[in-house]
Amino acid sequence: MNKELNEVIKKLYQLEVNAEILKSNRPDLCDYQYNGTFDLAKIVHENPYEIGLKLKEALEKNIEVGKKFSKIECVKPGFLNFTLSDAYINEMLTDMIAEEKFAITMPKKETIVIDYGGANVAKPLHVGHLRPAIVGESIKRLLKYMNQDVIADVHLGDYGLQIGQVIYGLKEEGILPNEITIEKLSKIYPKISGLCKENDSIKEECASITKELQDGNAEYQDYFHSILEISKKDIKKMYDFLGVSFDLWLGESDAYTYIPSLTKELESLDLLKSSEGAKIIPVSEETDKIEIPPCIYQKSNGAYLYSTTDLATLYEREQDYHPNKVLYVADSRQGLHFTQVFRVAKKTNSLKNIECEFLGLGTINGSDGKPFKTRAGNTPRLEDLFLDIKTIFMNNEEHHTEYSESDLAKIINAIIKFADLQNNREKEYIFDIAKFSKTTGKTGPYILYTYLRTKKIIKNNENCIDNLSKTIYNVHDRNLRLKLLELNEIMQYAFKTRMPSVVANYLYEICVLVNAFYENNHINNLEENEKKKDWVTILNLTTNIIYTLLDILGMDAPSIM
Ligand code: ARG
Image 1 (cartoon, rainbow, N blue to C red):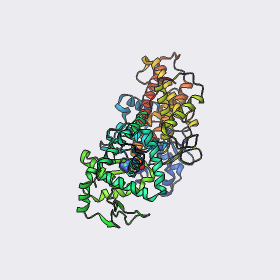
Image 2 (cartoon, rainbow, N blue to C red):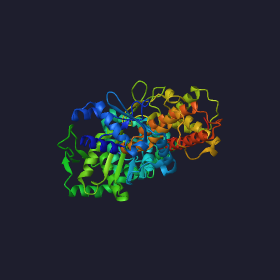
Image 3 (spheres, rainbow, N blue to C red):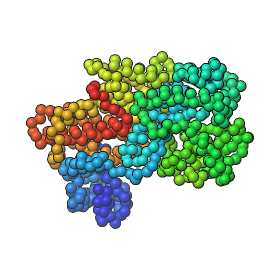
Image 4 (cartoon, protein in one colour):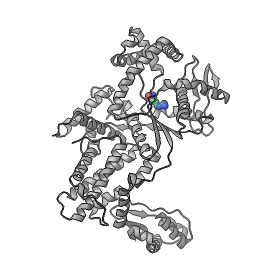
């Protein structure tokens, strides 16, 4: 409708202004509004109300406008208020019902590698690992839904210093590669990383083990493969529980094969500089507001670093998939690292055309605003956290239902995921299990509960699903229908910004409105056939949309609640 409005303004005032009709911030008065009369008034020296009246009159003569809006009002001191016509709303909804994927406009298809999860081998899993898994999985699903060719890679942290530390610890305790267990690993890493902080010679020893491992030392390779296998199993268990899956289970160590060719290219472009025995790549730019230090490519002892493996991995991805884009979902505090890596990539010939995006994540905090701890005061192991949530959920409300293990797993998942995904991913948030486990409020259980409720009504009235009439019956009905019409815009925005929170918040709004709809409009015993048919049809569309959005958020509904 912006087109018609701009035409009218041009005709009346000979002005090109790019006028925009916006969603109303007073939905009780109208659905859309135009507030630009005040700016126009300054240009044409006319009273805004007078301008509004003229625009209204001219717009009403336009047939397209008349089809879409049942009412255009000009109210003092000069606002234009637009009310959509019921027939038009239903026409749009009919389109959404008929078309594939609710008639959402799909972006151009691209090949996108998404790198998320990123658990570190040999370190115990804890709550800090949740966010990159949950948010990354949801972004992956969002991209796939929007027709992108997506390749998900877990990019395990498997060749860093922690491996040298763990090998050192295992050897100290006389544990052979075939005797390693996950329990032993989870004790050794914290112990040795603590020791390294106090004792420089142990720290150096661990660094040299890491370097020799990278160079192919057979004994260390044996340890490494055993650690990798055992740790991966544990990591996989967590991702399985969370419904998080990857196409590729690669890690830093897999990129090593690509380092020689990458180094050759960097050398041929004269990008590698020596600095105190190390090899670095300067990446600062004149326009930088803060200093961006050089990217360190190789340490003076010859070992490679996090940046090196990320560059080599990009090289590997380019060779294997020729991606248009590579997305990295990781802790916001890695922003500088990715800036350096992306800048180096831009300087090369083979990687410069890949668009790299860093999607940063805020931390998960406890009620005290500090990184989340268990009730016992530790950084919780994930398994304990899941148990905690289960207990709190079951004690929270009166649950008359005996849940199966698989239903409980789905509920725990929904609690954790909706708690996380409703927040802008860049912001930190407070993880309050008691609050997020309730079946009321902005919680996972509330969403699941709403979904099961609407699904049940549909199941009982399936034979009523039909074409929509032109009628809308009351305000609850209208509010819900209007909300559904926002789907296209919401999905475009979530896709563009890579923000699952946009989807989560919209899903919540739908749930609030469909509950109001249901509570005020009793469907089951309704005798008026036409109305019942319309309402069941709208509920069916709502249920399908909720299902789709739940899936994008990685949430699965239990069989009962
Ligand atoms: N393993 C890293 C960490 O725990 C996260 C990996 C992120 N992805 C990447 N390509 N660097 O901090």
